Amino acid sequence: MAEPINRVAESAVGPRRQWRIRGRLTRCAGIDELAFIPDDPATPEAALSTGRLLAEAADSAVRQSVLALTSEVCAVPAPHIGRRHHGPRHQSARCKD
Image (tube, rainbow, N blue to C red; front, side, top):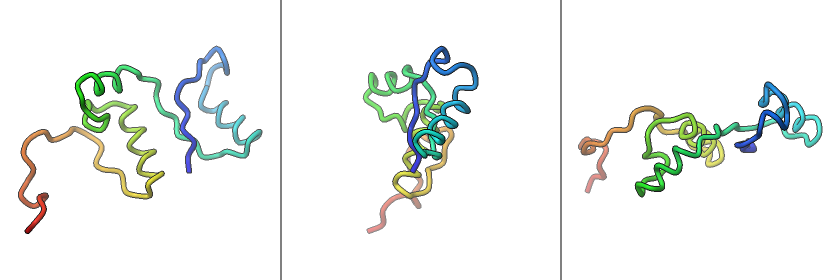
């Protein structure tokens, strides 16, 4: 399972942060599966302030990364990542009696 990485200052590790972090964690801790979550606090804050889930918020890199990580952790296929449909569901998507 991937270990999530979110906020690391370039001043702490230098340029090419992801490459350096991956190398150090693999070498020092034996962790080779990482999921880099973009540092974008505005997207989760916007979802929270409007009472929506991150998955319901505007499409963003942080949303895509969290969906991919959740899919991997839960061992289920990731839902289609793209524009969300906000209209009524199609008849075929509803539960049948």
